[in-house]
Amino acid sequence: MENSISAKVLIVLGSDSDRERIKKLPEVLEWFGIEYDIAISSAHRNPEKTAGIAKNAETDGYSVIIAAAGMAAHLPGVIAAYSSLPVIGLPLDASALNGVDALYSIVQMPPGVPVAAVGINAAVNAGVLAARIIALGNEKISAKLKEFIAQGSKI
Ligand code: RP5
Image (cartoon, rainbow, N blue to C red; front, top):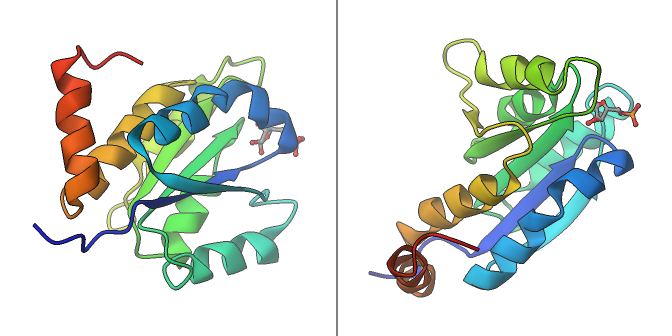
């Protein structure tokens, strides 16, 4: 297998206040040896910045985008509209509805613009899903994934 998929993930957070809830995500990506950058950009407060980040993600060398947001979490959907990369939506518990609002916003994308939703605050699964996508075309990450599964898929 050639390393046709770059081991580089872009994490986009809807707000600086979301950092606390995704704490495990960098740890997971680091375990796999996946490079990442974190951008803070709200789909409604900084719409043009968000569009620019999404439009440039592929040429910037990222293979997967993880977009995390709470409340009416349209961020992953907006990013999926501007980029053809796989987008993993990570709904966060940031409101009186305890993340169910964000989950429904992310999981109910209209046909043709998919976002792969993980569970509420499921930062670990977002990271492992990114690793699984990258492993399809990256020998090093594929080997790490096999090691991860062999040790019980725990981090
Ligand atoms: C979402 O609304 C963010 O992802 C955050 O979870 C929540 C609050 O955002 P700010 O009011 O800090 O912009 O967009």
